[in-house]
Length: 462
Image (cartoon, rainbow, N blue to C red; front, top):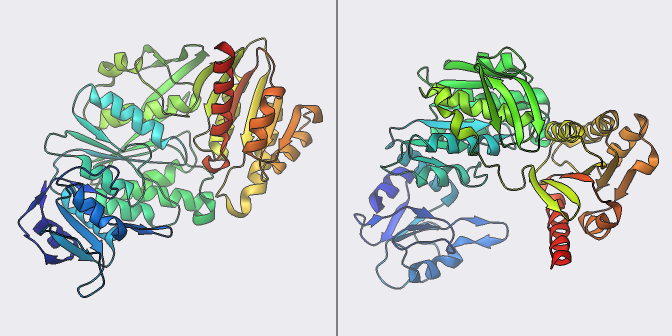
């Protein structure tokens, strides 16, 4: 809860009418989710104007309105006495309100960033912490200058821990988000080729991700995956206590002897045998990062081992489905070269009588390095012994070239123009007993292919 006056003081907004002492119960930027007595904050974008929804918000019972404008500017007519506030940049006002609210919270705040695994690590950490304390975490992938403030504003006086996902597309974004969130702990899951259009190089990615660790107080903790590139750069960026993790390496928390099976992944940790339902080496790393954060918060990792068996993965992140006589792994949420290579390793490590089929779509936002990076994944797929490589999009033509150069037979490489083509043709490409993994950047739309295959299998059963 906050007063309208708190909104004015934290943002520099101007009250045009109404009672500055009126209380509002949180902030909403979407009338579809607006609850009575919330502040409706009117964001605008290329295709919408939040001010146009102000009258509807007032009818839904908003406690106050913050609209884009200045005193004297033309605004929608809002009947009644609902407090009306204007600000030239409501998006900045949202961050300012969240910054004010963050400073009212005396709780641990853990920020998570990295080229891969942010959302999965966030979900794991939130699930583990929730067994011990009331924990609020970013919904879905709320990791930008709208999502991070919204997550902060979900915390209230009963919240005991807050877990934030922090993303970036360009240099300086993480530092700005950390000025809002003021994290006390930070995790960098790994450094790889992601968002190169905005960050320029993998070194640029490392510098940008290190901003999270640089923002931490000396009393805080920083979790670093030493299996990833640029671990030394990350370590040097922070004054906080560093906790390192590794798979088959030399971290403070190490997972050794990993074994992959139908029930998930089993490995050794701190002298104990641990089984996680999450699949793949990359998810061992994500779990280790979450456990290290718990250690940084003073929680004994051994006490959390029973909770690991109850972990649930995120939507479209290596979700396993049985589709008729085909096993399908839906990893279509997003993709970059590092996560694509992890998918290849995971699929190659599965054993069965059927073929291992990789359906890979374009990996976006890689800038000038895109052809080279797509080419490398093709070589990896060929070297790993993938039985059928189905490529969807334009950039993956380089993946096909890489696979063929690495010795993959041309009749095991199929190129399809887009997700619609894949939807129409995938059924004919698959055989009984195949294990199929689908992965691409979200905008490619391979999730539609998954949904089509599942729906078709359901209709066949009916």
